Length: 73
Image 1 (cartoon, one colour):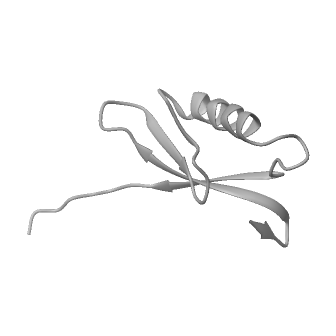
Image 2 (cartoon, rainbow, N blue to C red; image 1 turned 135 degrees about the vertical axis):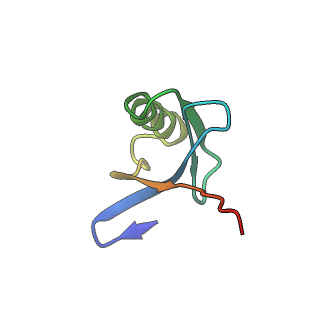
């Protein structure tokens, strides 16, 4: 994904059903999870480094947080 700011990858982040957080990359088969946001940032960077070679690695990693809320009708 090229943007005006450079090559970018976007992860959709949600709270895990068990605990912690899950992150899935849009347009790539990259998935990671962590117990805290700090740990998630580290695991996302590691996953991107493992998935891409240095020349093809995105310059920006964007985390898009999604929160689901269920209301009684």
